Length: 383
Image 1 (cartoon, rainbow, N blue to C red):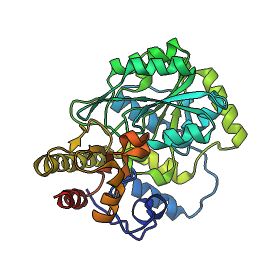
Image 2 (image 1 turned 90 degrees about the vertical axis):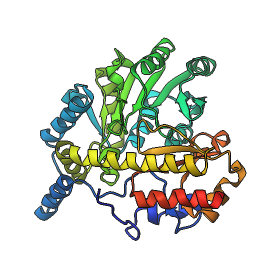
Image 3 (image 1 turned 180 degrees about the vertical axis):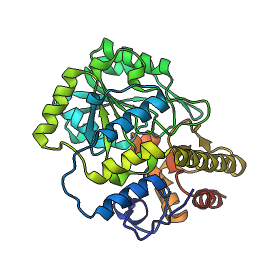
């Protein structure tokens, strides 16, 4: 893969650390985007549009929608229809909007923690009640506590569940049986489901992503959101697909977005997404190979030098969940990683509170050399 040194390019990961860490100049292993140059097909499509030299209003071509449909069917076996697809500038924006029109102020919303922290912020920022159900952690292997999940729903009259599939940060790719059990609980208690499936294409080995609508007949109680942004490193293009098979739910979505007048995205996002879906598969396979190489290096090095570090299996995503609690007190975690190791990582407590303070999330979508710098810094400073 073509690694790009992004320092000095105003990228958030390398040049925007002050807001999250209080300082700049740390070795960046946080925030989920890649340091890899995009697929040639994407760059070529954008060059062609730039060379045109006119950036007025764009009619979204049918070929864009067909590219989305073809990718989902060819890679995940799920057949979408054109009229089901809606736009949001990102998955996070999408589930924030859904919270707005599917729930009311002070309604309870449940998430399974540890989880991608914008889930937590979406609930509290929209003045809803945050309910958490912790995943079961068995030596770094995570599973759903179905009994706790259902109890929390009943105790708090939960109205909505935000699903992360594959799960960020623990790297689980949920099996069909697990998803079905979750959805049956939600149906039983009239809980609406928002399925964030942004990492759907980043799965490894024998693991297979199962689209939520592929699990069973849940179209009347669910909206699914996917995007090319994580798959093809296009976060800056701000283009996501909101999948809504149910007519009534589409009408609610359309009414809401008509009210806020966000009816479509920018031309660059549509062009980049279509090009990636049509020509980016070989590039993606190379990226996945690099991520797995990085993961195996990290896991094997910790096993050799710090055997009590627990690294969760990487079934999906390009983010690895690491338990350092055997070596570093949770109160000293940030001091150790920033001041001693000079690393910028995602801290565990961001994903659900202090009980995850012994963990960190490390972004593996970078060069092996960058991963080595981070891992060696931790190992050397703990010696």
